[in-house]
Image (cartoon, rainbow, N blue to C red; front, side):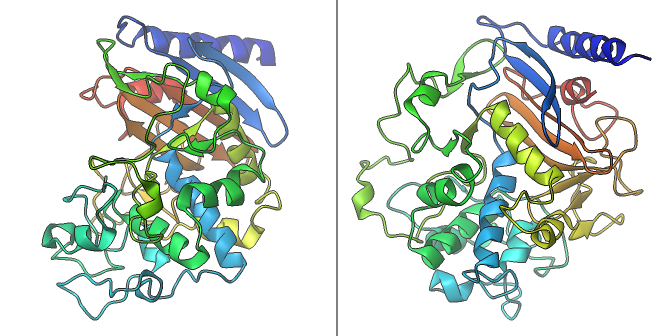
Length: 377
């Protein structure tokens, strides 16, 4: 089969996936890009440009991990050190007080933290306050023994990064990741260019209602959750890494995702070393039938903020349906579904997102939704 024929078939499948989505007013947007280590191979899009930024959700976690690995390579952070030494307070699961919690455990969702507390911590409160709630902790599994995906891990990681560097998280991520890779991206709009802000994708529900980022061409008056006033000068670095949404707050275009995917295909591209990249990919955890919560077959193998597809015979999380092992991360929030996946063996990748997806969209044949399966394929 010729390459042109393959591209036609791929485009047809993608447009079919888009047409199967609800059509709110205004319609949802969708984009799918394939690439290799050096170039973009194909682009199919509806209502969005290659350089239009969107709140990409949990792919943000992979980006944070790249920043952590750069600090680890510099000797600023240690993956297996007790994070209490950086946080300034003893971080322990109260049910297992003798087990230290490390960056490796936080990045791989094996820290025993749970999302049963609000991880959107406003200005004026602290991570320490939030984690003092017993609901934040797994009472049954000690740290290091059980995988449970939890957004709350990443405010802790961001707090550790701030304490270690003396830099605010959003500015630190711009220095460590976005600027070196020449990506016009940011956390909560603070370091994106004016041009990027002007192209912001509005996240909507399936009926067209605004959920996030209806900016009207200007930055938000306050980039953080601050119900009692947005005076960031009173923020104490390291006290609340949740402020700039490290778990999901990256605003980035698909062109930016491609650059991140190419870093994965180029053994770190000189931004992080090949050994650090292999450490990120791992996996640290592979589901064996009882050692984690897969959320219906969605999480089956995980490294340091890197998800692996088609890796566990006990759990089929293969939205592509071809059995090929891919690494990257998925995202889901505010009606958006997103993915960045690379097949390192074959040197190929795909990046996509679609908006206005109903929260109750049905599952497909894998642990992913039918919408994600259609766009992935």
